[in-house]
Image (cartoon, rainbow, N blue to C red; front, top):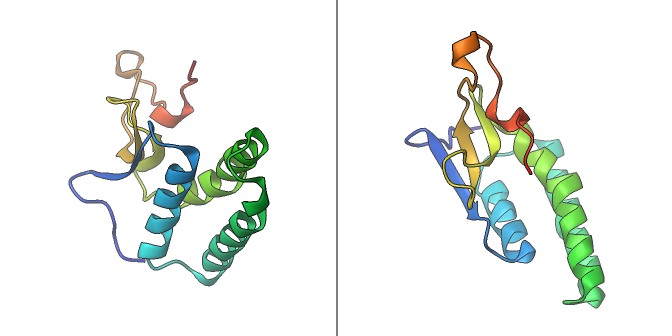
Length: 122
């Protein structure tokens, strides 16, 4: 797979978007890179699940389906693609951005390293 990080970040989407737009942005990124066979198959299965849910439309059930799809299938796929030293998640400096960010030590004073994506959000 070719490198996709430029200038130490890779922005995927703004977080103020509809869940459908967030999913589209993630899938667009996945289709833009050279994925292995199994990841391509999983991306196709995700796309198929989205087509199958079309009858739910813009209902609460449709939103719940998309949120669950993002949380359980897309998010793990995006995380596994993170290059060494990076993580996929919310920008530590701007909570409105989702992408790949450089991992930094959070607790440098204590000499312990804790990846930013392991912090709890509230």
